[in-house]
Length: 169
Length: 102
Image (cartoon, rainbow over all chains, first blue to last red; front, side, top):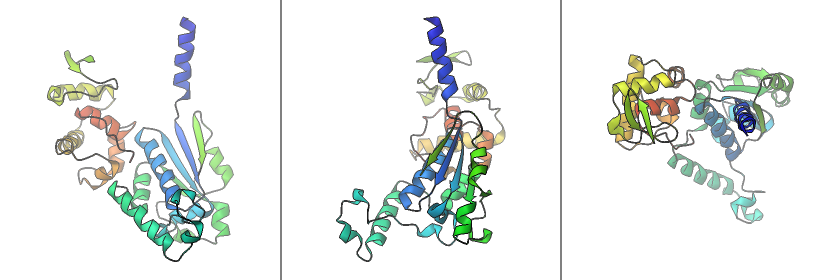
């Protein structure tokens, strides 16, 4: 019985997450905020966290684009509006405005402010080399708080410690 | 549940947060800080005071609030209270753990 309890205790000790790595590949508001809230939440719990921005996720760290992220009204069944209506001009802007209003009520930071909070909290922010090359982006297009541009291999190397989780968003 | 802090019986919840703020004083504060591996400095006291003020006026605590507090910046906050700054600092301040996700 004793050994069982001990084993249970050691398992409990051994599985506590110590580092969370996020791969953000999308630029819709809900996906970007999901990554930000989780990465920040990890830091607030004393867990290390890092975000790797790839493909459309790169929009969230492009100076000119990061404050103009949208929510998708087409192909998003949770919107509960007919797909054809979602495609009408102005629908996406309207939905985005509504969403931002609700988020403001919850005291959610803007993308710019959230990135500052993350960086100050010690969350590492990385750009994906392949995607940066593909979209012909230069360093000056990306936020100043960026910690660097990595290949996916470099990023995996950062997961080389116990109790690390990688999450693709 | 009761916990012996600074040789006094203090009412705390299962995570060790004070249940009754009336029981909080500087001695209790330093003992909890010690348990959290924090040595109180002048800046720590300033933050504790800020948190208690916010709690008194029933304003929710968040990391964004800390950023705008004018008392401390986020980097310093993480340095002063390692291992989850808001979680640790509120415990030391004798107020409930914030429920917010941000």
